[in-house]
Image (tube, rainbow, N blue to C red):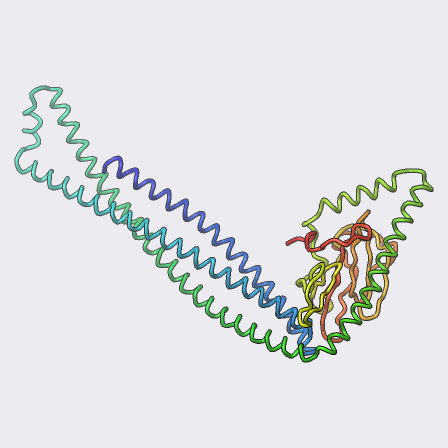
Length: 400
């Protein structure tokens, strides 16, 4: 085997190993993402089932169905990406197999030529005669060394051929296994596509049914807006009172310790942005800011926080250390808990039970109550984060 051939062989093996490791890591990441999505799908299915049991054709059912469709589309994209990765894997391995087959063919030709040359030489000239016909002792030594190298080269050639045959066989088997995985994934994709089509058909039917309830939806929307306005005024009043109280205490003590503590707490809160755990499991049924109503045309909704649709009796937890500044009840919204974290405040509304009281210190992930389920069977937490009275988008502060 020539030096160039050996180099090609080694490079091929190194490429094979390195590519396999990279591809495996990517496939592992995809499979984890798919598994995480399947867990979320299971949770959304439960929420969808619970919501639909109490009242058919509700906005909560539509929100859960919309979320379920998004998750289904993510699942299908994940499968498509994995299929694409397997296609790339198959193509790469096919190239390796082709290169190995070419190397093997060339090696076999070289080996056959070596055998033929040896047989031809042994038929015409005895090895001893070949050695002793040397014109000098140095030439004899050179001929002896040549014969030894030639014999070793034939042995090496045979070993290399055996090794390449083994690698080639393993590659063929592995490629076949990948093709079987691809076939299985394509079958899964077809099944998930059928399920997505069914979900979208159900979504269209639900939207049409809700559109027929336009008058009732407008009445409910107006009631909700009034309740939210009452809640917002309550939050603003409590925060303004809290800021004024902190200022008075600092002035009375003639010390900056209180202010310094508030600044430190605010800085720590800010430092945990994007790291906070969700106050409840579920999905965002209404985002922060202005957005179109899911059914009513030309109706714009304004949300100073996010709505998290969840399971019945879901426990709600504080996202960070703080102090409860208020516990209040507002009809149609339920109980609300306001917790201060220095200059920041978190608001948890839509609770049926509250397990904390005003002035109580709370710690991160401490349970503060349970989510209320309304007359439509919707279990939804209204969650806000405010810097003083200014609302910020909680989705940007919570873990992805």
